[in-house]
Image (cartoon, rainbow, N blue to C red):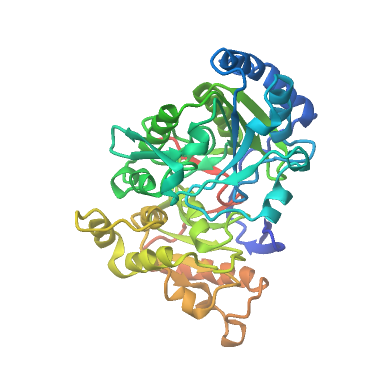
Length: 461
């Protein structure tokens, strides 16, 4: 048997796999040797853009005392905003040196449709010098109509309502992390504005059923990707003067810093990312085993690895996933659970017909369920095995798939035990092998996706 280690946030879990299992991993990126120096070099040599100092000087010709807004991600993204690899203070420092008054600088948290961050959370995430200088840090609120301005509509019909604090600033700077994104291709860049600073209604088109049905909506792809194109169109409408985006390794060390033009700096970051996270494949497997990784705090987030695995598993094959769902609600929000249960009840065809009906009323977070539907268009629900130590029996009644606890003895079911993960995988593989043999497949192929949602399967076709 092969022993592999799954690095969850709570603890590392070791599982055993059959010897014939192919272990598929992404490349190990080389972290930057001097992170602070790399940040300064990126700011000194921006991509297809003037340096920040020159941008400030140009703004001064219209307003001698220009205001600046720096957009940051919330704590659902591990963007380095403090310590030696922090990108926030070097930006502020350059604005100050260029003559922007500290009272005219604002840090704006691009929460999208997420909740506002509390002060203590902000202080833990942001360089303390921001607070010592009295620079305000505010949360975007997608439901606060009084602080949204209407810029018109996109070609696809998104009603563009954007945060006023952002629009009113003379100098608009975006920051963020570029990682693989199963809808927009990659995160970062334009996503700081859309959906980061968008009104809630605008996210309905951005995450709408028709848009997500496109075959070009997938990890690492921004070519002809309607989600990427929509976000970029909104960001251009709102205006962006400068971006600072980063790429990271699994230890959250910087692998790249990309400053400059909204499009070109972001594309450079996306190329860097693809070089090490893409896992090229020229075949698919009968059985695929993987995990939800750090990001899989709940079942909602585990959807990311399900989409990755969809590329690796054969039509009608089997997928086994374990997750460390440590969130307050290990499944997700009420909206998510409601729509997920509809997918479980109606199946893929019935579910897609329902949400694409003109009578359907859009429900926030249905987009994540639609991404799960991509998996169940590839394999039957009963061929998907899921196990989480935090899940109780009631949770499995909501989610599609086979309950991993059913493979354990009654004494070992629902015990919140990480030790049961290895047993569930072992028994799950035996269950899949038996079903494949009954279907006439005597020597099935098997793969383990070691990086969970982070290593992205790219099929040759």
